[in-house]
Amino acid sequence: MSSPRLKLPVIQNWNCHNCGGCCKQHEIEITVEEKERIEKQRWDLDDSIPAGKPVIEKLGLSPTSKRYRLTHQEDGSCVFLNEQGLCRIHAKFGEPAKPLACQVYPYAFHPAGNDVAVSLRFSCPSVVSNLGERIDRQEPAIRKIVEQVLPRRRKTPPAPRLTSRESVSWPDTLKAVAKLSQFFQSDETPIQIRLLRAISFVELIENSRFETIRGERLEEFLDLIFEATVQELPADLELDPVAPSRLGGIQFRLLAAQYARKDTHAESSRGLGHRIALLQSAMKFAIGKGQIPCLQERFAPVDFSRVEAAFGGLPSESEKLFLRYYRVKIEGLHFLGAAYYDIPFAEGFHHLALMFPAILWIARWIAAGDGRTQLKPEDVNEAMAIADHHHGYSPVFGLPHFRSRVKNLSRSQDIKKLISWYSL
Ligand code: SF4
Image (cartoon, rainbow, N blue to C red; front, side, top):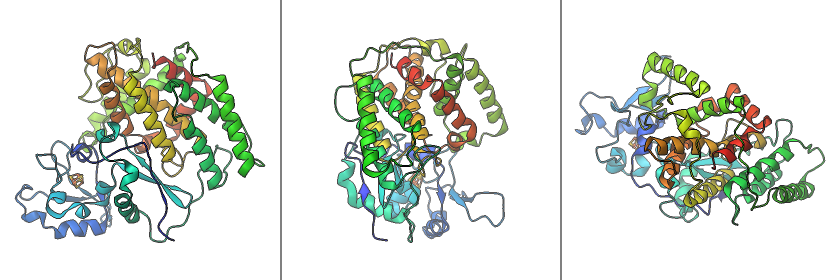
């Protein structure tokens, strides 16, 4: 199969600014070839690595396991991260000598029929802040990485399901994706109205049958329901925020807690005591009273009630950030199918829509911890980087109990309430 066309975001910039954050947060699994390549680099003879410290370790308990990862320093950073926050492999042998996982981050590549859709992980602060060159102008460099990621004999995978009941062809799935993305394109509509419109659009898709609606008819249908949702929710609509239901509040706090966690190697290797502490904090999140359990060192002690008070609305820079976030994630297919626990289009968008209140909940926690009652753009930026670290990557979000939590929030209309409630 020839080299695929890349669908690159045109509204996103990025270059690495060597913050080293990704090298502190992720466990880097390497292939057998990468293990051999790193062994040939002879780090055992390099003074910058403590004598006797292995740079690679085996994963899994089986003696025949062929899975390996890079080892970590005491603080959880990769063994190759130096004191200046730079990669030793990169500095000594150049970027292509690094494991592929390090070269790929923060990109995420997803099949889009015969093409490849490119998304980005907003866990990288440079992605959140839109720093660097426009992504679509970096196509040759991105193509080199894509070619290493794609299997040599690749076949076009089946299209992700549109709803839990039905699938349509790749071209029809991509029409639905393109229409969904249109809710986040330029005009002056507030982000919360756009999200409410997009949820109504997705609900209409969920409640329809597509046996005979294909091709041009599907396109007409999508146009029709798009216009209907825009008319039903005009840009100047005054939202009357309603608190989520009691059960919705519990389910949402448990979800926000999951997004606020820091699952680095250092955290996850803290053993049974750490797991028990997490279980206890989950109970406190379900109750939602008193002080919020400190899920990671970043958060200061704050009461649940402080996060529920109004925070003076969303800063205008954050509006723009969310617009970019939703376009990159939707156009990059970063919410469904292979990219997202094999979840269908409609269900995947409910998960993605919930990122908005989850990020704002975390941003409020950051602001309240600083003694403020108004959000700053930096709070939202940081909260997005914390939450998006998990989006599509932490296995828990694809588990049945988590998926049914999101389905319940959707059925009870609580996702819409949460979006309005945390925009206040
Ligand atoms: S190998 Fe280099 S780029 Fe990859 S995680 Fe380690 S320090 Fe970072």
